[in-house]
Length: 212
Image (cartoon, rainbow, N blue to C red):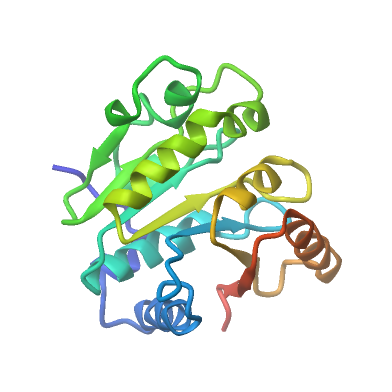
């Protein structure tokens, strides 16, 4: 049995105002038309580390599961993995093990104690993260997850200091930029927006984390 961390407010306290904010984000994504247009994969990134990408993405995944959707979450932050901590699972084998040919895609998925939630942890990275994330196995894994789930959510490193998010963005149907209230710098957010626009992937919006 998995032990979920206390950062998953959407699961532990679904009636809280924080959980309601994730339902609002869920509603925004549904009303954006992305899902109706066949879009299934969303990338989460930010300008710098510590903005709360992993927490927002994990709670949003739980919210979609509570809405009856089958969801896969993928930890693409091979530099500083955190998703396994949030969901209380082992980090390896995971995505990096799959991308480096050490494991088959079907061997790196974990099914949590939340029905309809599949977790792909980051695993052990032994190569350059952008090179691993940009290889054809990543595309094949995403297509497989999209074929078997209603929604696939990808947690990427911050887009300004690293190129990983720019490598992943063209493989997805949309990007959500995470900003932290009172901390994120406007110039960095503008830089992330420009980088994602260069990647050619629609930006669904900027989600403000820890807003008062």
